[in-house]
Image 1: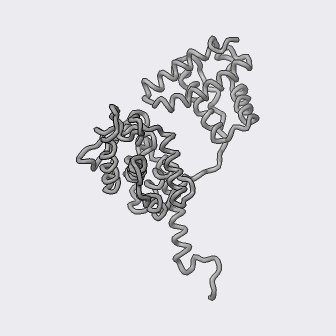
Image 2 (image 1 turned 90 degrees about the vertical axis):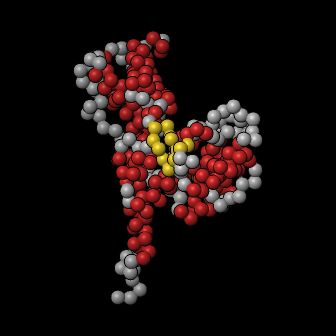
Image 3 (image 1 turned 60 degrees about the vertical axis):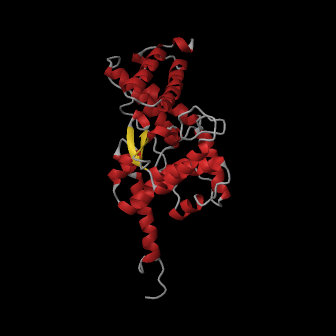
Length: 304
């Protein structure tokens, strides 16, 4: 059977249009849904599922088992199931099916991985490098901005020159789901950005992007990731990625303020539950401080 003519293909495209144009999801997120749903559709097609009546709990469970057999990680399987559930619920809302076969299916549990963060001392070590050329001045400005304002790497890359407000004290950020937020920009980041802009003006570019490469084009996320990793290694640190800087921003802010709601706003999280992972990081920090400082915290006392 031609995959393009399979009965689910058009409906999946309709669903993806709904996610992007009605729900306002980003193209990156929609593309992730598309990849997952293409695999789901292909499995159903190979299994001979040609109507909604055949879309049963058993066949959906068989699909999940097939993912396990292909050594897909529990976290990825969770994402696949979430994508398929969303599609089937879309069918349900549009009257194509009565009940979702996923209603009684539980996603596999995956180990809880806390995000990696740098200590304030490690951040200082990373930012202590002295730029020797145009690219390194740009790199320093990128790192300072991400850590200062808690940006995603895609948000930093997509920042334009005219996105700043109040003499660069604030930055308008277009985040996930095309939602805009206003974030403060710290003094060190402002200084690094001003130094970079002086160098940027010497480059030939028609791009509005704040961060450009030597050819005058907007820098790519991949390039930022590679350059930050290499700078970290030169500075005597393990490889660092941009998201670690964002996690460090949130963790250090929580340790100082304890204001989870404000951190949610600054990070651009739509749900507080996403931000709450940082309370666990902060709790770990408190345990370490307690064990190091409290006279009765040690497992073995020298004397009673």
